Structure formats: C-alpha cells, structure tokens
Length: 139
Image (cartoon, rainbow, N blue to C red; front, top):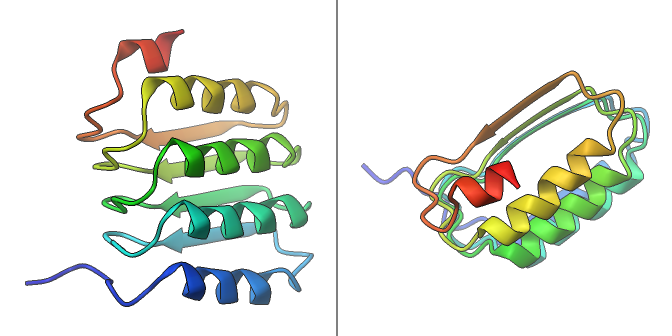
C-alpha cells in the first residue's frame, strides 16, 4: 500500500497558505503532510510566513513525517515563524524520518521555543532522524 502523497507539492502548499492568510482569527491549525515527498523547504517557507501572519494562533500541529526534501533551511523558516507567534500555547511537530535536519538546526529551533512565554505543551517527534543526537536536544 502506498501511503505517500506525491502529488502535493510546494505549489499546493503555497496556494493553501494563500487561503489561510485570510483567516486572521484562526486559533488552532493542524496540517498533516505525512510522506509528501514533493514538499521541500520552499513549502515550509510558505507555511511559516502564514504562521507569522496568524497572530492569534494558540496551537500548531504540523506533521511533516517522511517529507524527505525538508532540510535545516526549512526548519530555520519554521523557527523564525514560531519565535514571532507569542500567543502559542501548544506545539506538536512530527518530523520523524526527516533525514536532512541536523543537531545544529534543532538547537536554534529549541532557542526559538524558549522565547514563547505562553507555551504550555510541546510534543516533538524525532523517530529515525539520523542527523539528530543528544547535542541537538541538550545543548
């Protein structure tokens, strides 16, 4: 059985982002792109720009498991967006099997989370992320 969504691309994410940008009162968002192998850092950049714009967001649930084209660059976009989402109370991010995300980027991601004073719940999935070790989590 093929569980991938190969037909969703960065362009589709861009169009979704354009629709979401009009929903300024949105408080919670859940996006599942499990195994969308055509989504790259560019798609994550589009989403990140929307997260910055949706200033009332309290909860983000993002599943980019097995999105193999997402790298440290995409995580950088996400880090910058989350830093500006000061009302966030809950973050769930699944980036299991994203093999191009490293310790270094995870450290800066963690530093972004430290700036969120309203944050009450964080869930991060690292399953089979070969480039992430203790250093990315502990430093």
